[in-house]
Amino acid sequence: MTDKPQVGIIMGSQSDWPTMKHAAETLEALGIPFEAKIVSAHRTPGRLVEYAESARNRGLKVIIAGAGGAAHLPGMTAAMTPLPVFGVPIESKTLKGQDSLLSIVQMPGGVPVGTLAIGKAGAINAALLAGSVLALNDNAIATALDEWRARQTASVAEEPSDDA
Ligand code: RP5
Image (cartoon, rainbow, N blue to C red):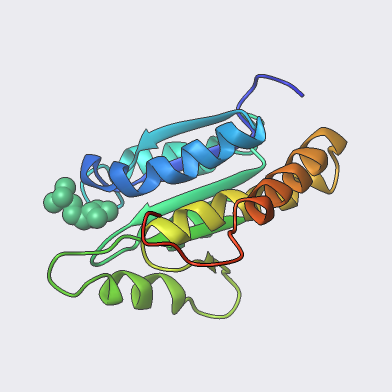
């Protein structure tokens, strides 16, 4: 495995990090090199263009984009790169992330964004999906994914407990 980032995690704001760090932690657990950046479709549009247009040439293989509210970051990123883009709807305060979900998932035909669940579950699953994509050509990542699932299975108790 190389240390060069293979996955780019981007998010619209610092306030998205508590959610998106779950994607980062999951990639770390799989041993997948990544980078994490704040790139806002609205507040830093120039940074977004530069990031998306250079992503493939810089060696990234998958982009995970988290955004909340009028969540244009994943879609605009997908418009400017041929890489697979997975969108994570951030749970917004006002509409609980339903605004984020709908604005990420409703892409026009021809510009796909693989949209995950709202919040932490979506961030974790975006990283696992990124791992699955990379595992197609990387046996070490495939093994890491198998081991991650085995640990998850082993962690599930047979009976509920008051102490858990
Ligand atoms: C979006 O606006 C961000 O992705 C974030 O979820 C939301 C709110 O941003 P802040 O006002 O907290 O910076 O662009």
